[in-house]
Length: 528
Image 1: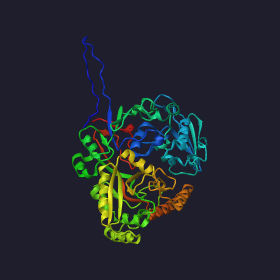
Image 2: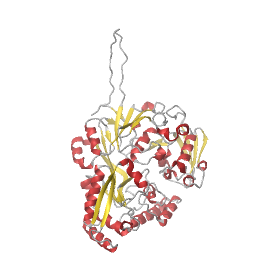
Image 3: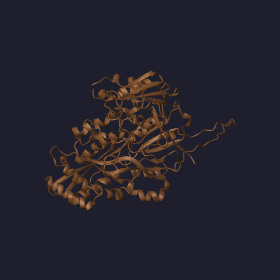
């Protein structure tokens, strides 16, 4: 194991004078899923990017090591009785990495910028609860109409469209971080380059070498810098999870953000408690698109494919019990959701489902051995093994398949940009514990994440109704109707629920398991 401890070296000069002790930096080599596509947090969307943004920035509200909400830039806040107005009081010692004070105006500017259509922020809808945010993003209102106002440098007032029970959770997300206006205006898109980038989190950007590492250094201007134990955090990309395992065993990294499921038995035996598997708010699913007018556009064909997939086998044999069989888009255990809905064949034996699948295919006019589907996935042994197993399962119903692998950095861009595909692999990790965060993916105008480009006016109407429904039970019933419709049409086939899977060195302290699998480097230390 790489042991990042403090060393003292005593040097004697020719004059016999003792030099001052030299102390080594405390360095955390942190395995990450892949390189960030962007360091502009208004243009990020992946878990790998959120890990980095969380270290670089701090929002009004933050989370501690256990995933509990704590004050961030705002030291306190008040909520109006009607739930529509939030007043945040910013701490006096909040500073940017260049020493500038963080002010309420920095948040107003950030909220205006992310909703400005010119920014093309894929994740802008996270902040749609803010008054006029959606209208600005759709071009029917101006950025200055955003429902956020700087009362003074240390007081921010935010007005919502409707009461939003999870609004404080949203403010922890990277879309709600402030942005240094002077840097954006001076450098434009280059404001994220090393030397240009100004951030307000526990760390600041030092360098970035794609396919090698992204280096963060401790931000001396961070308000809680005295309690940050790390000097350097190196984010190292590992699309090949087995490579991260090898580097971990060699002591070259202290954690891996994902691990090769096929080696789980080996890791549990050799690495013991350093293998962390915990409940995670996420769903692993297969978006289905196909050609216009083709068989994959028929819900009966999509259900036939879904019925054939043996989720128990995938969870046990492919993922070595680090995943759970999944039959819904919204994962179990989520907040604000009563009586969850599942695919109706959830509890049926897979052999019985196979017979029904063949009957559905016949009903849809698909004869045996006439349908061949392309199974697309991003580079990872876990994903490759999953899609290979799915391909074998499809054979039982006379469906052929071709595997297509793509590198991670371009994979999701391909689907977001309406690239052609039959079936692909995707995963969604909840940004907050509310069913809306999973169901909004399939709204007709969500071009960033509605990979199948499925459109349903009825579904959109239900989601719009839920947005303005204050009563949580009534809102839950509306969202349940929306998911029932989604599972009936099945533009995306849920197959597994996530567990978080990390390798964590026993030399690390401050790593706490939580349902969002968020582990800010701010709370981590190395020693022992």
